[in-house]
Length: 300
Image (cartoon, rainbow, N blue to C red; front, side):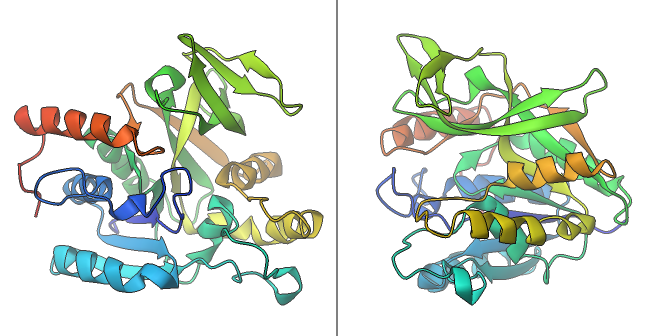
């Protein structure tokens, strides 16, 4: 069986964080959250790593990760730029890339095997990578059998502000029937609330199953997406902040009726950095894991 590939979404600008959070270190010896995901993925049997980045920080990324992964796995870099869209949709006033769904489409030419895709700034846990690697290894790469790693919403919120999560609807056999990107979920007075389409806040249950952008795909996923993305660009050409999310691609996949998305469940406590204030919590949690020998004190 071919080893699966891990694609890492790292082209974001970290506007709420105030900087390049993908490369911000969280341990004394200079490891980033991404380092822990890569370490876990290597242990789980992933054989290739594809970083989706911006040209502007290519040099820093290569200096760090080429060295760390030399002799351990294949490495590739793909660029997601604001102008990585047909010319008629390019807008000089736009400041952000077009979102995670757009990023996914960027890897089509370098990923020919089953793969998982994750956020650079989320910590998913060892077990999640093991489960995903097993699922990908046992999936025919010519099939339309996709998957997602899911978490309980209450385990994935920040104490320091709002987050966005994909709210999942699941059938009785643990297959996804729908996923909706909720772009504003926050904890207020110990209650979880989300913003609806009209800008009103309504309660959302802590046991809601959510996607943390940890998806498993075969190369067949690229058959979906481009046509849908062009339609999205047409509808949003004057909206400088519009983003095309992976859940939009996944819902199109589900609507097609030819593909399935298996929901793999993790009850792990997520942690990640959306805000600068989240960093301290991440550092404390990772220190605990190192003290409990889940990770060595020096990863590389």
